[in-house]
Length: 303
Image (cartoon, rainbow, N blue to C red; front, side, top):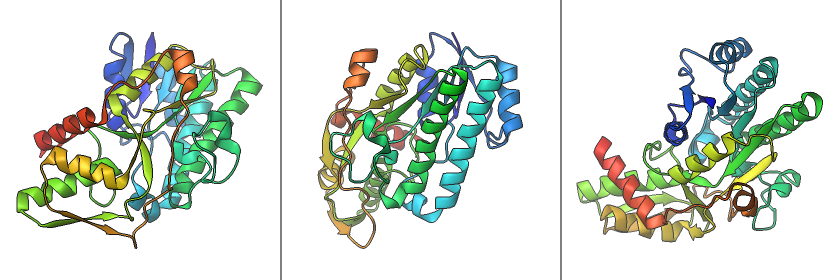
């Protein structure tokens, strides 16, 4: 199977390329060479590669800080890139698509666990609503292409990803790499305290990136059989408990101060993943402590 992967050099993309090693996986050029916000670039890409399926992972992503700093860019870039790829897939003979969505698209007040059918029942949590709404709009656009043109497309909705290759940035990165970076720096400098965002009470479901990549590789062979599919680990953890797990993995023994003046995001976000199990036979297999140890090791290897 010839599979085109956009965003192949990104955090998730590199792992998906490895998960697709049994196939003829083709990495799309980086954005400097192929700006998917331009419809013509998307058309040329699919015409050149002529894939049997396209996995669209290219995205403008970041943590709460990044979303708050540039909400317009997060909304615009993700919406326009996805719309260009959808239109190009249709123009190339309705090439099947897998699109990486986000649990940020779910309504802030939806009942837990979050089921795929809950996606449309309210507005997302405000701190990353522009990003979440852009991705939700793409799911609706994909459905419109399916109904009008028969385009086969599945949008996957992964829980919070973490693992080797993530963006390690104390202000703009996701929660796991940001905590690892702060605590490792504190350990190396013998600092007595680190400051983390929020009050430590929000709960998150964390998914190791290799588990997610394995699921996406399965979806690539069955794109369009379902419209939406959650991908999660089935376990939640508070930010306070996560900080303790990461401190242990890093070897940091100092204090943690919570800055409640900084946003902590949605209180809870846990996924119902029965569809992934019944449809794909997939479930996450990486234990959190194992995944954190591998992520810490990868960060130290690149530092």
